[in-house]
Length: 298
Ligand code: MG
Image (cartoon, rainbow, N blue to C red; front, side):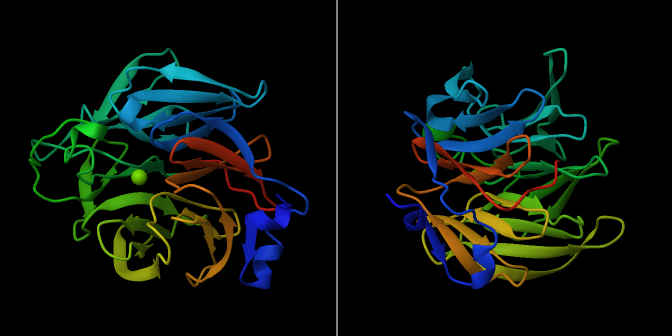
């Protein structure tokens, strides 16, 4: 396969974001549905979820190997790092968001909203103020395949913000299935995927100086398959999963290019020492590609 076969250039701007003569590396196959990648710079490894197999996998970037990191994983899905480099995980089965401390112990950050159990936290990010933002759709309770069958106690599927003082706010309450989420580099725009509508949408919310949500707008509608997870690079370009590959969006929500993939994607994540390697979870496989784009460290 020629390297140009991996990339579809729709706008010339995309050409400056990719490198000549790079290939998309297949790093692992053998998962059932891979999702939720997080890169841990201090360990030079990537953790990612194999949700139906109830395990978290670890890609060792130095030795180029993959092994099981944690099993069972409570059907963990999305991961991120907080400002202190601790791994935050969304757990479907236990319907909670947890933090792995540096000494290895586990802290439950949140499992209820107003006394009712969460549905099944899906994806999570941390901002520079120490807030944890996460989505809570029903995918982990609507089938035992990715969690356990249960009724929603809350009755809606929300986006939440957990403040450093422990306060939990439902900040977006009108999406069908809030899924992946990300912040712009200046942390003034929150992007949230709604994967419960056809076509799936990427919503954009302006945040004011206190981090409160202002008006929302439909930023982009997915043209192939479904948006799920996304990351924003340091220049503000959005790299999102879709049915035919990674879609790269500019600040107007236009698709300027694609990284074409042979499998349906779930999530992407920047990693590597220079934060210029895009890791891609796609159905059974983990892929990675070096880009001429970098992301800010979380
Ligand atoms: Mg997701």
